[in-house]
Length: 272
Image (cartoon, rainbow, N blue to C red; front, side, top):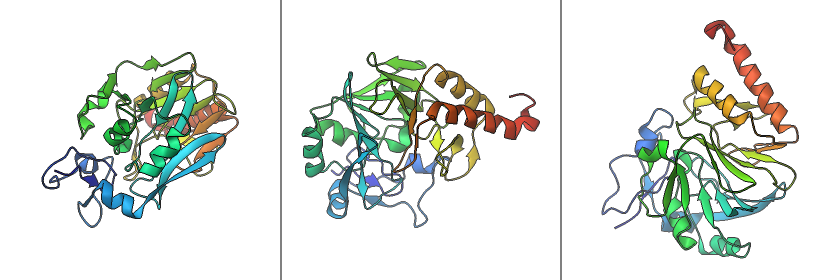
C-alpha cells in the first residue's frame, strides 16, 4: 500500500494499492488538473529529487521544497507561547529536515490554512510524535488522509494562547484560516495563507475564490473577511510563499486593499 501524492497540488492521499482515480482537490474549480493529466508521486520519489529548504525569513524559520514543487507554499516554524507551531504543511518530511526542526525545539502543533496546503500533514504529524493538526471543520470534506491527530475546530476564531489566535477568514474556502501572532519577532504578524494573498507589489493583498483560474471572491465573503480581521493589530503580513510578505505597515496595507477592492466593484454592488 502506498500513500500517493498528487503532482499538481502536492496532497498526500491515504494508502492504497493503486493510485487514486482522481484528485478531488485538483478537480475542484479552485484548482486544476495538470496539463499532462492526473499524475502521482510518492514520498520516497519526491525525497529523491527534492530537499527541504530551511532559511531565516525576517526573523522566522521558513521551510519549503527545493526545487519548487506543486503550489510551492512555504511553511513556518513559529516558536510561540502556544508551543512550536508548524504553520502550513509540505509534501515531504525528510529525515534531515525533521532533525533540523527538532534541533529548534520540534513541533508541538500543526496549523494549516486551507486544503490546498494539507500536503503530507499526516507524515509531518507522525514525524513529531503525533502532533495535533488543527483544521477548520468547514473544510473537513477535503481531507484525503484520515488521521486520529486531526483536530477540527469551529467558529470564527480559536485562541490557542495569549499571543496566538486562529481566524476563520473564509472566502477562498469556507474554513480558510489566518493565524495572528501578537508577539512575533519584528512585531505583531498575520499569516493569512492565501485567503488574503500578498500580491507582487508587496504593498497590498488580494482576494480570489480561485487564483489559478481567476475566479473573483464574492463581495459578501470579502466583507465578512474584513470584519473578522478588523479587531487584530499587526505590523507584518507573511504570505503563502517565499518573499510574498508585507514588512511594516501591514494593517494599513490590508485595510487599503479592502478599500481598493470595494472601490473597484462598487458600481456592480452599489455599496462598499
